[in-house]
Length: 351
Image 1: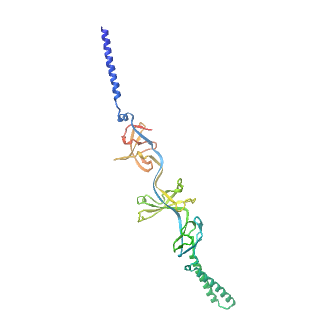
Image 2: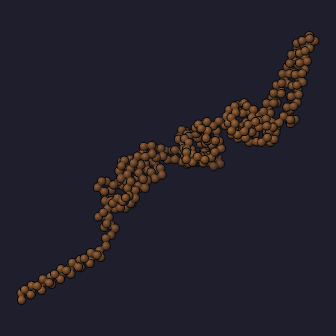
Image 3: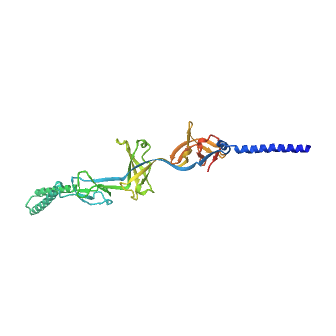
């Protein structure tokens, strides 16, 4: 009888235990873990990127048109018709060479009259010389005729020179502004001569940028025909006053043109380097945060805890941010997920 009772008690206890175990299993299935629970156990998910050494620069961009650093226009001296253009674009000329002529047939030029007067004076001088050699006239009469001839010759040469258009400098013909047969006015540009071993790019700079630009600054110049390459230039001079119309300042950039690939009239873009550091410590610019204490970033330590670091930021260049002080090369800097971080919290680094 006692044995039966004992068996019954054992079976009842086993039932209660089994029921309790089943209840605990059921309850564990219903338990929900929150994000904060997971973060406490595994850490706050973040993305990091090590601080590294790289070059950075801060630039401004402007556009302009290339011209010869030294160029000059040959101009007409009279209101007259262009008779002949003696050069073409691309020709190299020396200073003083006749590159165009004006009409010699128009009475307004008085060329034909000057030419006739010279011929008459020359014949008369020859006649007077013959008489003088025969002793028929005095030396003073010969001198008088010689002076008359010299005056006619000077007048002829002066008129002829007014009809010749000469190259004002040695260089290359880069533009011809007129056509043969066209009437020009005194002072009107006819042909442009340029020297472009060095070329010049004039840009118009805004008031907001002009104080950051100084003579000697490096400039990267690009032209549309040669998008893969760039040309190094320097700021040569800066206007001292603004254009009253648009309040811009003219800045002239000189570009070496050793191979003569840059031609006057080409459209170009200029990147003026305002600041540059070839050996800067940089982080991803997304890492930077600010609060009442100033700029800071989060750095992940070896034990996977985060550390709030006050920093002095420098140049921003695309995605790169220069850190002047506050971070060392190779340290892991949080670039995403830092908005949820607090000093000393554990993090989970995501690949």
